[in-house]
Image 1: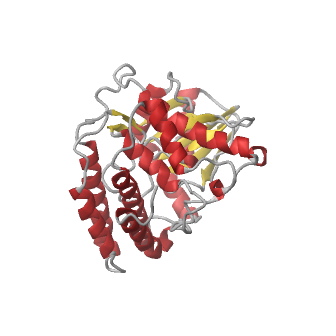
Image 2: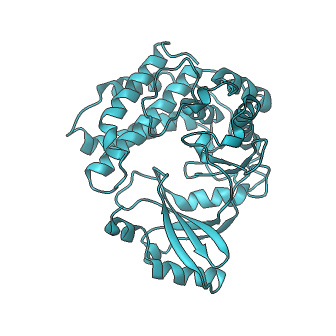
Length: 353
């Protein structure tokens, strides 16, 4: 990471002054950038005997509301007293004089985020099954919340959410294409977008939705059996269609029958091992826990891959404009067309649930 990019992320002196005002003086102070995130930036901060996490948008131009960290903080704050596990929110700040953007602070938790592999303590068929069950059970908890009761009744407009998702991600892609189409075009994505617009379900349940729910956005506690102790990355949360959340989670979940992942930087394959639930089993459990049916499953799985392609294309634009040093971003030149082909396979029935 270049020093210049880090300096665009945080002014350590100004941040220290803010934390001192909020939390009191501290003898020990350290800031470290977390390298795993691919959307909002994450900083680990030691402040005295407290271990904190700061979330802020990436520097540079962003598309619409894709990086609204204050909104992310507000939903975590509302959910904190429910049975949905989240890190303890500490404070939020909209003063750009401190680090150059909105940001919020939360407590750091201990445990494992399963990205590249499973921890050794989970490497049994029973624990692997529980990893999948905990993942989908926690999603069902989100979808069962009474959002009015926890103060989120005005958090979004659930009616028409799914249509807006299709429209929004079409616009995100158009924003990215403004720059990326000078490098190469992805015509299949236009076909996929047309199919989605023609096949939007007319009705859907109204629930709180996370918007980016997947295995590496939850943390499992340090013990066994596996237990989800935190759900992270609420920046896309709103009131909407729970089936869209499920479809997104499934787009990252691997079955042994699957072809190689189109985006190996984000989608790993360790859940193909013995014991992990299949996508069909995860869907059945979600349906049982929520009382909803996963109807129009091809639509929701296609929408998920379309959104993933949209994210990839936005990453590619940021790379081309010099607004990220993430080594994954330039790879989107080839990864996004591969994702477009996957979306088309789902539409055509060539990649079943």
